[in-house]
Length: 371
Image (cartoon, rainbow, N blue to C red; front, side):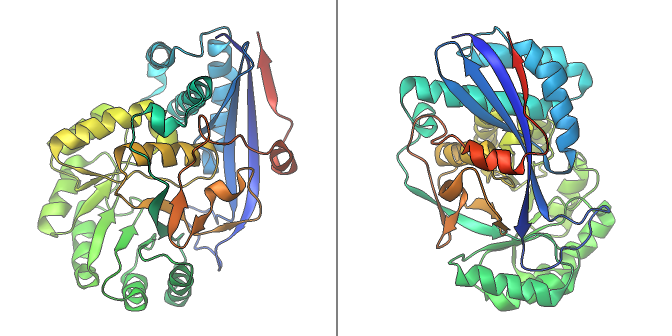
């Protein structure tokens, strides 16, 4: 099954988070940037993938168009493992994380989409999962930086059927406010996004101890400081989660070996696609580390996450960003209902995006590469 064309597209869709976002790193986040990859074959099948976009969408697009697309034209779309191995070696000198790995993630998702369509089976079935119609979800709030807005967001989440909430706050009053609103039974998580030294992280974790955190996520900078994370985990006596920014399987191995993590959080569009997720899941199981994949996107990567979570973490809560998109090419498949999300049962990822919606929000004409 020869790859005859590759198409890349970048959409930017406004969203509402119920308040003004706190500025993080000089960026006020109010649009969802999504990088779409479409792989077309000579047998009439095509697959859709998503590469990590957000603020890095431009660099990811450049990598897809200048390096990945030319490399896969004419290749066999069925050779998922072979293409992954060969291209990983070709791209290794560009780093173990970043745009080249994001591009390979999109390709892996697209090829698995094609494989599912060829077999007329949903991806979760190809991966060996037991049937599951819906997954429990938690509301992943963006950063507000103000206790009143956090309280209002938590109240909205509860009204929409969510029981559990994750914050992206870095000060204690917002976390305590969330606990007060949610009550003692809700699971409350905090993702700090790597702001602190080890000493600062220990101090902050101790201040949040009375909030009963289910986990504290990425408290230390840089994210690869596994020894530092292990210190926070031990000295602050708080469960630690990380992995969204991990540099591949071996980075997870080092984190597990260091005793740094209670919860591993690989992201399907940043770590290498479903193929990489399966490897990391097996390693996490061997080390006895809980797996709760990261999900902060709404394209084919979201659908891939649904299938992968149903396979490797069916009892873990599914992360759903608590925002309302102005529109989405995937419609109801990226919506949560009463605190849960639907697992697609159509072939491959379960649905192709609506082209008209992509065209409405694309930043430029799609880039098409052909044999």
